[in-house]
Amino acid sequence: MDLAPRMMKTVFKSTVFSILGFFVFSNVLVFPPIYAQEDAFDRTGTGRGICARLDAAKTELGDRLSSRRAALGAKRDQLRDKFLERRDERQSRRAERREVWAARFEEHFAKLREGAETDEQKEAVEEFVEAIQNAIVTRRAAVDAAAAAYYDGVLALRESRKTDVLAVTGTFNAAVSAAFDAARSDCDNGVAPETVRTTLRESLASARDAFVSDLKAVEKPRDVLEPLRTTRRDAIRQANADFKAEIEAARDVFKTKHDTAKGV
Image 1 (cartoon, helix red, strand yellow):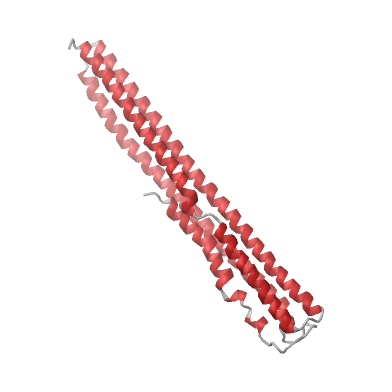
Image 2 (cartoon, one colour; image 1 turned 45 degrees about the vertical axis):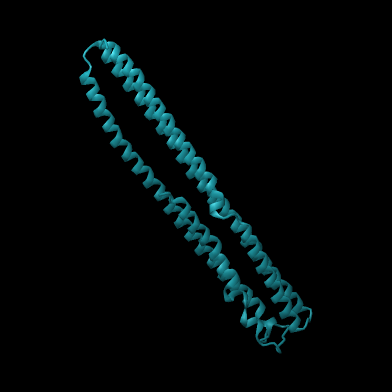
């Protein structure tokens, strides 16, 4: 079973939808301490009104967002390591299966060599063995290349999505910071607290909406993974088809030479 789509889906949910749930739907964007005390207005910052709470709320929010980003970064690294671990496990199992099949081929080759009596028959056997071994090496190289290209592509997509999500969250953070700075400027210039409150709420809502829209623009795992999966599948199918054709050709040549050597 292909584990990459599942891992990519998990990564996507962890880095995008977790951010979305925290930044957009949590109480962080509601700021109840700021929106409370509607009749209190203190431009000096010593009272309990919205202006008095702005700086502390901005700092608190920044700390919480930074903490969340760090946690998501750790989760993303953990999932990446898990993905690489699963990749290595698949490669290890593939190597083990190859050893089993190599042993079976060698048993078959040994029987052919035992049955060869004349020099012509022995030569036909060795040519057949060489052709089969070359076909095996060619197929292995093709399969390995297809697998490597797929996993490299998945990792590149993960990094690209990470960059996109970080850019979106960076824009959101800047918008939130700007909203607080504008509110502080309004407070310092004697704007009425209700106006400060309303403007801040609208600015944060706008930042939220832009954030949601930008996240939706980030490509989904299925959209970007499917071409990679298709390319790998087609490459492996072609490698198997080529291998089968080479085996059949080698068998036909061997049969012809072997029968000729036996005088059939």
